[in-house]
Image (cartoon, rainbow, N blue to C red; front, side, top):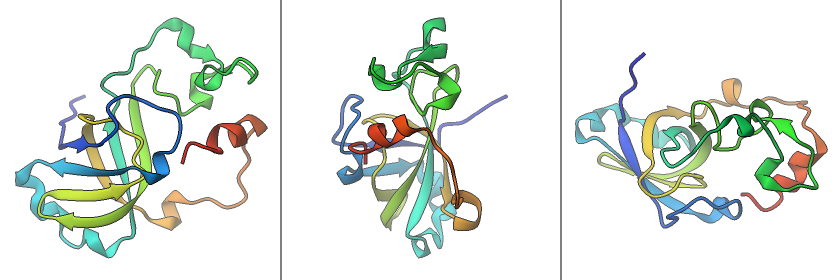
Length: 148
């Protein structure tokens, strides 16, 4: 399997945090040779950014852990979390698209730090990306209360 980095995140956030990502405005700078691939993307209000969490670490202890290290929350498997400590540290976030300028995207709500490699950009299609009548455990409500 071969993946290619298509761009880089430019963010005011230099290291991972667990709060207030919803206000963060970032730039996703794609390789200049990919500029034409952005044609008509500005017709969408939101996009999905797929990225490689390059400063993430992983050890066998991360397979089951307390979300965000909060010991009052239950220990759950890493595949039941969106944490960065994963066997393959790939992130995906739906973000608001603020604008397209050449080979750069201005976005809001991207929970990726400065310098994060970008693997893909996809338009947000509610038919694919949103599901109604979903179920999540109670501890997720606490985590997400201040995340975005």
